[in-house]
Length: 235
Picture 1 (cartoon, one colour):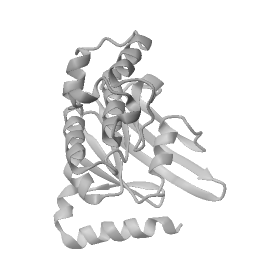
Picture 2 (picture 1 turned 45 degrees about the horizontal axis):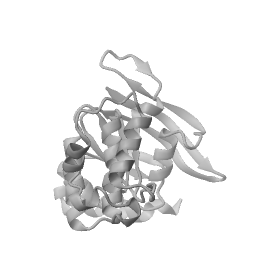
Picture 3 (picture 1 turned 180 degrees about the vertical axis):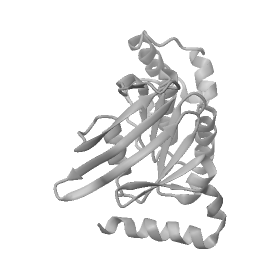
Picture 4 (picture 1 turned 90 degrees about the vertical axis):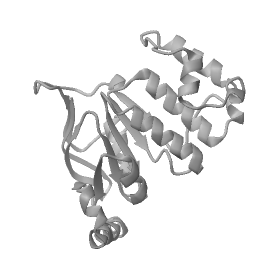
């Protein structure tokens, strides 16, 4: 499976945020979407998620036979940096409710096994979500996306505000979930992109540019990327 974006354009008034996004994402890989805060990473995700309309271009899924089809809502999982959860529920109640509402989902684990998989502490499982740490709320949000098993996972700066232990746990989960899906992980941190992602794509002046990870060992090349990140909000 491939996710194809063809000449995508999005503007807000006179400001063209996405100028000509043209790229093919392949199944089984984690793509690091690298760009400064305000560079258009969330706009890019919101276009794919159809939360906002695009001005021009198209995007679609292409199977192994070359047949293309529209990207459907059930194809997409979306994890934001600031999770929203029903704080009046416990973690267990929330998970049970999610599975009851989505009867079409056939879970391959028990609720306890899902909690174990996400490394959610036992003492938190029957506590109210309002008492969860930010990191544990983030894990719950990620867990729902894993259970739904979307073909395209959009991760919008999910590690930025997490402590180092939970961030490493989340990286482990993200790596374990890449098979059979396309994962696009946005970040403004070059080191995080290099550590986690198979492919790095720079969102620079409204366009996507493929970065060769082998070049990142070259300090001059690394400086060039950092300069691009500094300058890309000048348009």
